[in-house]
Amino acid sequence: MTEMERFRQECKDAFTEDKLVFGEGPSHFPRLMLIGEAPGEQEALQGRPFVGKAGKNLDFFLEAVHVKREEIYITNVVKVRPTKLSAAGRIVNRPPDKEEKARFTPWLMREIVLVRPQAIVTLGNVALQAFVDDVIGNRHGRWSEANISSDDKNAFALPLFALYHPASVIYNRSLKTTYEADLQVLAETLPVKTNG
Ligand code: URA
Image (cartoon, rainbow, N blue to C red; front, side):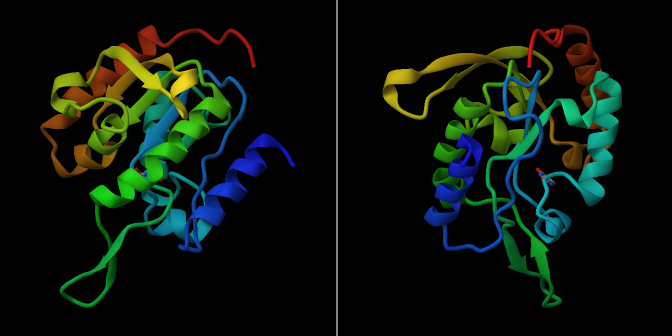
């Protein structure tokens, strides 16, 4: 069993939900780890992060930053699809709640320790707040530092670049220009690939 397989098994054992959507991509020293919020309907159906509509948004990101999907590791803070019943009685997505974020964040930290990306890009507030107690409006479009620790002894820092969540850009067109300018900054400043 690889370390990644062990990680996934232990995570599955820790949760009663049956459909966990894990990260995908190179699991050792990728150039970038992209972190979203939680899986949506397509992600839960296919068992992969950022597919369906979210995958289209991701393609735009990849093109703007000049990286290929295969060269980055893509994951979410919360690994189950948060749902609710709509007024019409349909199962729809909802943002992850406090308790879900608290339960999954230590697993995200373990995942980062295992993968050791060269840099982290967070999409939206949920991903950003796994690392800093701040809002995306204050942090987007620039590098800061994420403190990573899965236990108190082995903490380390990684460069973190915060972006608005591409889905929020769709709902709020005024953010589009900001999001695209932020992507440009990221494309120009992303650390070059050094190994892995
Ligand atoms: N799909 C994901 O996997 N993550 C998101 O944050 C949104 C859609």
